[in-house]
Image (cartoon, rainbow, N blue to C red; front, side, top):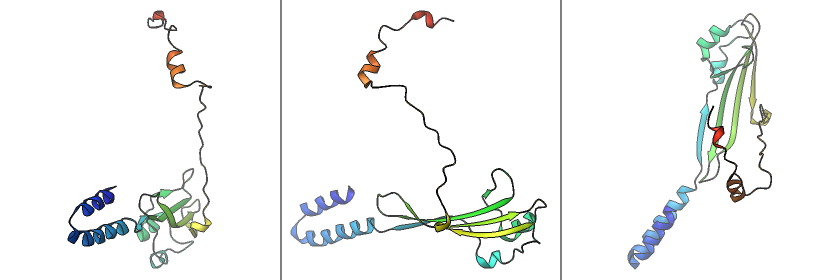
Length: 161
């Protein structure tokens, strides 16, 4: 919207300013549509992960070597999950996830590293954890019918307890 206002102001200017002003407006419009890349989360690099030894390291030593994750197992504390995502924003469109890495470190009952797995966006699936749908109890009534339907149904005795 601001680009359109700027274009109108440039066109209203004198002929000498129009050419350079239109070039400026075109440059601003192109820059507004250039993609913006944003990174979220943290996954340790391969050289940091090489310090973790399966079958030897514990939760404490893993936390010291590569840091504690922001996410761990929800139902039990058998795993640590490091998640990193990369999103691309283009203009007013909704951001699109273009890359995702998940590093899963699982521990046995004694707290020793049992497995290290790395997953990408192609491995992931959208899983619906919970779905709550509220059914409407208004059947075939428009707003006016809903508002006028309560007239005359007021009982002052309902206010007293």
